[in-house]
Length: 406
Image (cartoon, rainbow, N blue to C red; front, side, top):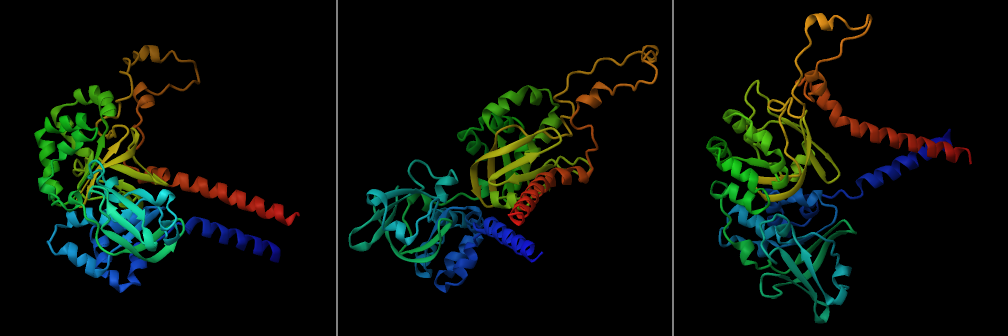
């Protein structure tokens, strides 16, 4: 019995270590270093901290309070500050040792600014060069090759998960420092059209009521799930057959009246209301995730978030691989037109004791089960977790029993 307890304890410890080995919190790391308090504050204010924490491989080039003062001297907007700081977050691991062992002496690192889609061309990449005398230089790629800053010290390292290093000054990038427009000034449909969602953007432009609803909510918070062009083209015949009012409801269904970063979507799994939600007309969907993949689900279909067009609080626009369809409008969208019901006298000729077949509508409609039963959604959300837990428990018990028989 004592041996079994020890084996179970070992199994639990190993599992816990595996599960949480990638967890990190940039805010807590920097909290132990007062000289980075301003930098830490703006990582939180811009929601970059959330994005950093959800990444499993990341390098944060921290700036001292003095270096941050240089950035803040021109009184940039919070969106501009986010662009500048996101240029200082590298999407790769660079610890102090690796910085001095760069292959061929130089490397080009993608940054979180580049990942937002707001950085055109080479903007959003950082050049890292191993210089003479043991120094390592850093420079924004769109700054003419100038290495503005140098490596100062390592602040915290967790190979190969997160590295926090200090650089001497802020990286200079005209693109990142350009005044970022406020949410009311952002051309929503222009962003969509320029990044593979022109079909959806055109439908939104043609529906003034829905477009006004989007724009009215952009200032206070808006998240849009925009189908890519091929997906919307395939869906368009269904959209074309909707009434004008239903077209408005559908377009508003694909937006949420709050700002949701990807990390927020991952931590807030469950039912989410949309711009089309109105009392009894639920027009909601369920957010689910597995690892880095985020999906949206209704009774009709499930779609996957495939990219980010813009993520600058209070506005986020994501692309999806398919069109998410609300059950309120498309209960029978995938079903063929039901055949006329048989006459009563013919229906009575069914063999004695046999059960009457369900109607075509009931058999084909994916939304004929009770739409408002929260238990259905809870079961959907938890089924994957329960299945995984059951498999793991079975594996653990098998391992323990096998070791006891040795």
